[in-house]
Image (cartoon, rainbow, N blue to C red):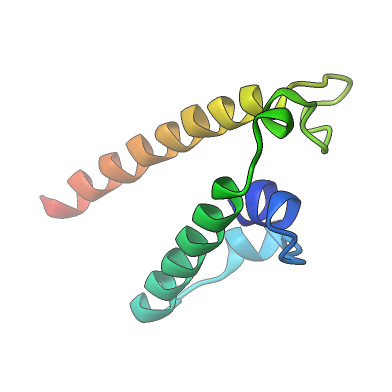
Length: 98
């Protein structure tokens, strides 16, 4: 969200460190919640400023090699992708609740 929406449309300057996202351990709950809240604010602001013309234009990054897509299409893809991860989180939550 910070990469594809915040940095691209909110011009936040965010630079993704994907390796760190998957390797960082023992992050305090308060830090995670703060990152979530910050991301929500960045995404809300960036999306609220998108124009109809920007939605219909090609998404500025080439996310899939050799394929362009409109920003609108990419945002729909992003929602589906995040829904998949939400299902994974829910599955793990159920394992931990046992």
